Image: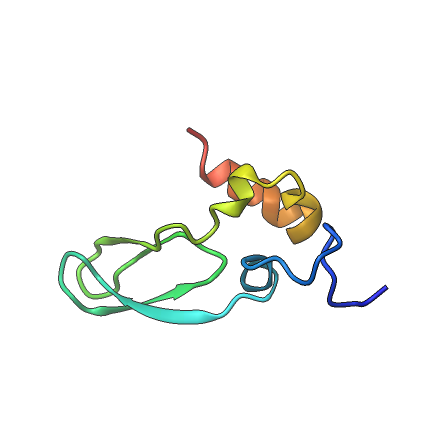
Length: 87
């Protein structure tokens, strides 16, 4: 089996790599406009400059609907996401 195949048997899930191997990026704070570092495996963080909440829209959306999400990203990350996003 090709080690790049995902649990679904197809080459890579579009969002799984960024969840399993988080990477930083910078987005503007909606409150003050300052650059805020966000990680690809997180949805919210706090701006160091003004304390505003910065949300990275849709970052982990696949974890909500994909039937293979827990298997794909691992149980610990999956449970952490569910706990942080209780509705």
